[in-house]
Length: 203
View 1 (tube, one colour):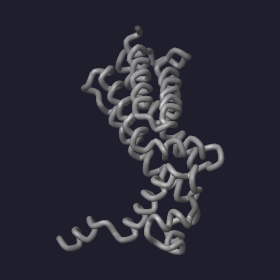
View 2 (cartoon, one colour):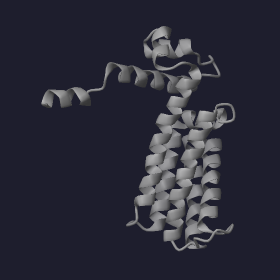
View 3 (cartoon, helix red, strand yellow):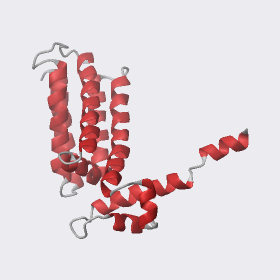
């Protein structure tokens, strides 16, 4: 039994190759303006043949979709953690959520920008991105309600405010991440956190 469990806990060779493909694609996104990313360049970077890559993914689009899915899974986990954190003061939860989002844009901004850029042309990426923002909206709605914001259905209710603020935050980080300057990202995070906190306090 112990041997079987150990074998299951060890990443399969296929899993490691798939991870290498996604890691390579993420790295190549930074250089697309120099050399367009292709199935050939992804396979070469991952140390496998083009034929081997097709065993895991049918196209470059499928690689990008899987890469976005891997990244937004972390975002969803962060959003749900904020929603479940009923012990911390709402202001602390809001600041923490914005800083975690800033961290993701700093570490995986190229993937998140690609998610925004490819959404109009790749329905699955659009679904992944919109679903992720929807999870954030739901989570932050609960935080706002816990802070005393009205849970009413109108344009000043918690759901409407969370919807607008989440999309505002997404756009602010998207624009700030374009030149790769960490100071711009931090500034965007500080501004977004301030707006969120003023909404919470009613200031």
